[in-house]
Image (tube, rainbow, N blue to C red; front, top):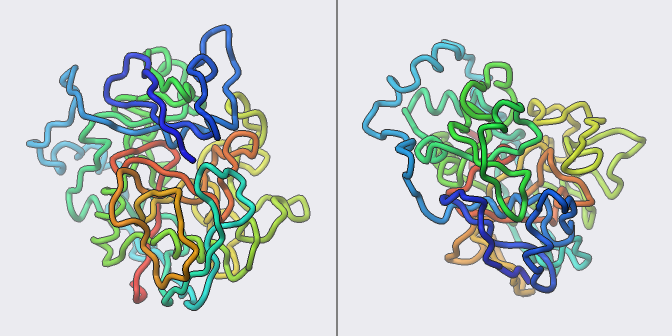
Length: 375
């Protein structure tokens, strides 16, 4: 089961590193890194993505976004850098029909048992349509440009960024980290517009998945597009692409014929990414082969929010269109990201899962939408 321990963030008061995975509690001295201890037990910590949770908002430095300023004024300089008249086909995602019927959810051979991957259970799903790709920066920009929406990361004034993609100058200004996963740093000014904080931008990454979006942000976009977030059952069924009892969207072998089918981590996490798949960070959407349903990047690249509340306990009775628990404190995310490696975060499998509080945002977390009709 998932056990929640109390750790102390290194002077950062907005966040808490809450949960680690493992059959038994892990002593804090095995989790918190020090200068003399470079070892963090992989079976207990993973990539640390699930620890990026806001417990409360503490406006200690007056750095929180002033909601009284109109977004159109606040971000006029950034907007001027974006395309003035993007084509509809660039801002609207193609959707494909995901057939309904009986499907299997979960697995009886879990890679990470504490995550609640099992037991395998039969579900019945109505057909639905799903975006073929993760929502891109350009698509999210079109939404913000049309509505003036301000994301939660922008309101809080910061978001979590993986230290491996930050410049030395940015890192030198940060004295905080997550105790259970010190490669995650709270960066002021980090948001979907500025993925690595102030001074960074997305003009060269318009077709990459949008990042630093909370569950609420993702839901707002989907509603604007007359869509919704997928349930975990829908997402997992779509991920399998018509295959049964396979680890990945394309089969059981990670690199068939020595080819890369997803944007993942190659090398020694978190110290070195060889980027053998061509990308050390996110890749443009649709850069890797689609699965049997025509869906791209169902694993790797960016984590994807789902509609379900998180639980690690599942009944085995056959359910129709399951939607998960009726309440909770965390939402399910699926698919893993460019930071996933088997030694630390073996969650780039269709049955794998993780969670974050709904207001969480990070440099490897995005989403895609579904609907009952093509939009």
